[in-house]
Image 1 (cartoon, rainbow, N blue to C red):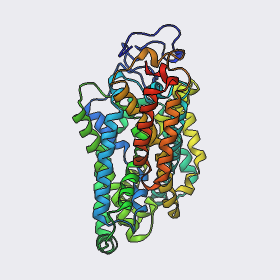
Image 2 (cartoon, rainbow, N blue to C red; image 1 turned 90 degrees about the vertical axis):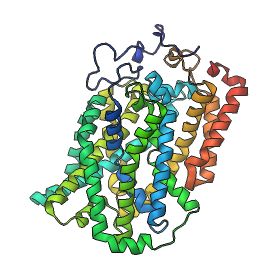
Image 3 (spheres, one colour; image 1 turned 180 degrees about the horizontal axis):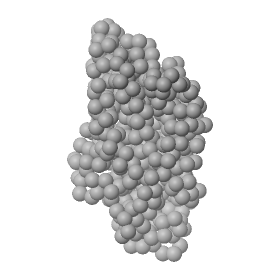
Image 4 (cartoon, rainbow, N blue to C red; image 1 turned 120 degrees about the vertical axis):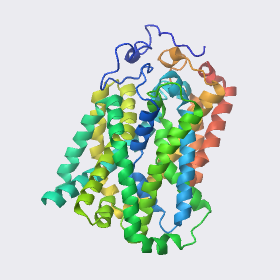
Length: 460
């Protein structure tokens, strides 16, 4: 059965009672569901703005800091560019199903892993999102605390962290309509602030940058390719659940247009953030972005604007990238309503101990963290791509995807075995774990699905 868009029978999941949810009455704030998305609310420009605002990750700054002493400035620039190109292509490929059928990641994954099996990739995707959520919230709170200290002489980081997190939870509850508004309003401020900070860093530390990052040999070997994966790894989470976003984009964009949207939104902000982290850390040895920019800017007004940018950028990144994915997991696994799930995710971020992750000595630990979770996300990505493009030839049955008693019930053993094969390969080459996992996982899944009788019902 292929490409069926008709409503499912009464045995289908009650969370998605029909395939026409969100149609006819206009999508309300915070009314997200796992049903196929019929009302698309983001045009080309809004979608571009969303990805631009959502990719200003302080994690990218930290990854730039982590390659100090390994790559020179040219090598780091090329590594970031290669990573961003791979990201853009991966987003187009894995977001195709969500764009065509309007389904989120947790539904898309059912055709390969099964209803019960989908909980594993959902959890694997959710954990790094919650960790980054806490990490970036602490950075944002630190920026607000620095503004308060500069203007009013009041400093209490814990209080600002709690307030900042509660603010993000409230914004997250507005759903994609709220996200669209937030990203559209903030993108010009974000891009302008990034350009300003980049120029300020060069003016302030130009001599040290030349000595420490330009006039060094660096390497084009494995550490270089490992660096491309680090910058890619920041987004390997989004490459998995890109359908959560692509299903909100209005129809009519071809693959080349989508590739351009992804590439030209991700590349500028990733280059700016990665290179700022590399240059400042290489010149000063400081890796806390709040301290970095407090030292790089002399004018009090500009300092306040810069710090507010840091705080605002964490909001735009978190609500898009680090709230929606684990929220959808909770909606699928525990049948939690959207707003309650966003609150739970926001509270969970408190338990990630972000004050430990932001320390200067934590950059290498965050680097390892990216390598480890990329080792698990890469195989899942490969399995999803093989399943949709090669085995199902871009045709899905919505009836099957929303029928918990149908052919996708339970767990697909082929997906689990293929995921394990990919993880083993990834940990054999930890510096390039995401790359190393793709072929072993994808090939194993293809062969098992083609020839193993235990997977017969998943071939429907």
